[in-house]
Length: 283
Ligand code: F3S
Image 1 (cartoon, helix red, strand yellow):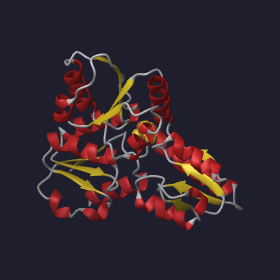
Image 2 (cartoon, protein in one colour; image 1 turned 90 degrees about the horizontal axis):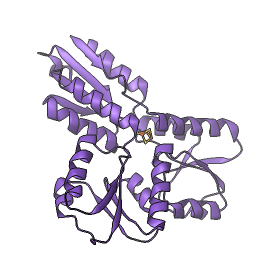
Image 3 (tube, helix red, strand yellow; image 1 turned 90 degrees about the vertical axis):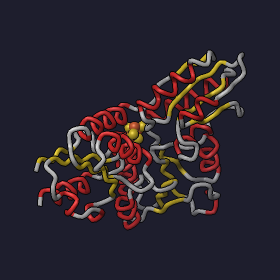
Image 4 (cartoon, protein in one colour; image 1 turned 180 degrees about the horizontal axis):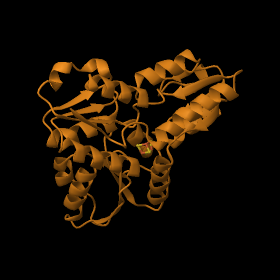
């Protein structure tokens, strides 16, 4: 059996950086409580491991002043400007692990909405990254859309100047499709593709491998949106695509009549989990 593991599978630059910042903080500030604002990544194994090392999760939306003063690490998805201020005002120190690709979107949303432009976000309105971006928009002239139907129904004032930005993990193909629908409406839209390079490469490679194999495994956390998108992309070219969290989530029987297996993984999947899945397939 041939097993192809995507080169782009696993931790992206932003997630690796966030995990490294937490690990360094544990070593550097042994006398202080280290918090992460929400789980640092969408991976239960990594989060549990950090908890054992003393890291405490500060629940999103909780009042930070309820927590003993310490160091709060902001995860790679980023947060609203107001959240940063509230944490700081409560006397905590902040280590900002917001991925630079996300920070760039915050700056764009802040500047352009400040200039009176309307912001149109392509993404999932309930995802923390989008919630964070919304928190950098000045005023409330913004919309979030995700589907073809929503793009078709979209309306704005004909005088609006619109800046379109995408969630960093948005599906590239869908981005192009929705931008096409929206620009045909004749609005003054400046569409910036803010899907990050890591996501774009990962999606392209996953689609290519899925087109060549009989069974495709996408490894990722249950709540990981970038992993779910990988699953959707792979499923389009390979009906035998499985979304799994660990090696224990599939039975070897699915590989019985199979010659070619592909493996990819979301941005928050540690390398050891990818290796374990690969090993199991080799049995
Ligand atoms: Fe950053 Fe892209 Fe990863 S935005 S956190 S490098 S998926």
